[in-house]
Length: 451
Image (cartoon, rainbow, N blue to C red; front, top):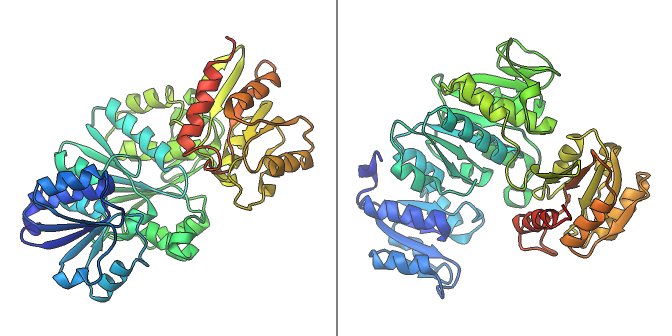
């Protein structure tokens, strides 16, 4: 770690415990800061709170005490999910107390360069692809951030020989001050998390924090096919590396029907790529560009492109059974993600869809339903999705009560070379605690089919 002296003697409030708060508290305490942790959840059963207390860290659980900022804090490190409407944060900002998320702390203490990957969709797949490329290329990568590993805990152990591959959300990027990745990757920009950010512009500006501190010594890799994203990247000082699916381009990384090009020169044949879908081709271009800029050997990149079949629950290839292929896209909790999944295949598809009813229409899926020959519906939106499928001219529509039944019904509709695709276009919470559990049940049901 570097620059720990900057925290010595500071009074720091860590707002929100969870994993990131726990890791940040330990690091700052060990650096000599006077740390107070405040979490709104009750303390009962909170092992992290008990562990921090044993280290001499003051922990306040069960709410945010009135007047807590009267203690004169120099800095707040907050959990990314806590909104800025929180009373403590409103008061802190009024008092000009800096408010960070843990990726700012990550940047301040990391000896390793950081590649930060953000975007409305594709972050996890791009992060995972890049990590595997760098790992096979012996660049000693460490994976961190919104993908599930606390970034400051990763940075604590990183050396200058490592590269931190960091998946960064808009929530995390809002709490940055000097954060400056060596390479920023911005996959795409669509409206999301407006309940948190309030407006589309506020959401986009949060994302744009990934490049606000970059200089001409850094790079930004971005989706050149999206004019709305380019408007934000236009202000970047960093060297711009566009990626595009609209044919060969002289600058950056691009693709046509046959090849991927680097600065206008053929780089690899698309025929080696295993990961399906044009949306995933965008992720591949972004990850490949970052790998090239990081000094990764072409052979390592080709190795990953020819073997990587997807992140779990994100267009994940599960298995092939008697000529039928099964894909788990349980992470598709909205129509945008399901559109991408449907567009990935040009063979007859049996779609398993439905879930939590948020009152949204499925109409924007209609242009992508041409290859769907049967639909199996689940959850609260089962009837609504069935009516939508019927409006698309699909006559094979059945409702399943649970995932095992859904897989069995879907399989009964298949012929050789068909696809069975779980891509719900809805959240899981009406039937399952998470999309991960929903996807796991799909995988389990598929593997129990008569083989």
